[in-house]
Length: 386
Image (cartoon, rainbow, N blue to C red):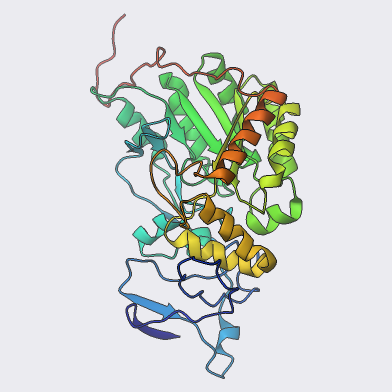
């Protein structure tokens, strides 16, 4: 291993196809971690986070020392946060508060816009994000305490907007189920976003809440191609499993939404209509889509993945991305960051709208209520006699 200042360390290069005419030069790609060490993972590399003063680089010094390095195994540490509800004031999303039971996500989706948040922990948004996870076991208790605050005003809480609350470790830890139990007792509305079929485990709670207009679930179906899904979302459930989850939730009376997200030009954009068709046949009544977002480290991680798996499409994909991002790889402008701009983005939007109309989607939007909110009793608070 070598160790050097991040200002002095130059990332080793790998052959990259020439950029489209007029495009700004991109940083050199990092050398990928050996395939056997990252088997079942999405990212190809594990570059240091952007806040680190030092960077580490593995290289072969001729003594085959790299052969002794262990594989990337999933570890889970405890997150001892004092609060669990996160607030935001973004004008282009439909919620102002959210909960993330976990930090990092084992699904390993290469396009995940939450990857850069691992840099705040001094870890890599690459393979560390998928293998070094943090759980918040006290989340249900913290939530109940926050809901009990005298000045708390209920509005829908979104869960799964950063990392997936139903990723594999939830099967044993059941933090998400504990959160739902608190929300059900308090009569508090919740909107869930996931790509995991594990959400069906909690259909009993969600069905009861749905009868009171307190719950809805959105499941992301990125592709129906099993090969593409496997390399792009290596530890997420297969597309048929997700469609089956949508069907079971819909049959249980839970409002469901299919999310075609992200839409990646020249990779999965041709599947928009087929995904919506399959979801409508599963009983889904609502749909949405989000264009691929490449903030911060996600751009280079996606480039590495694209070069490793679809090198023939590299130039075409990034040409189209820039066409929809005002000539840039990513534009964080509120109002356009989710859908993009330009003729290609317009065409994707119109195709989505036409398909929704054809399959009877989005005729009505489910609305959750806050009218049933009952503030939990605070510790030591005297109970009412009546």
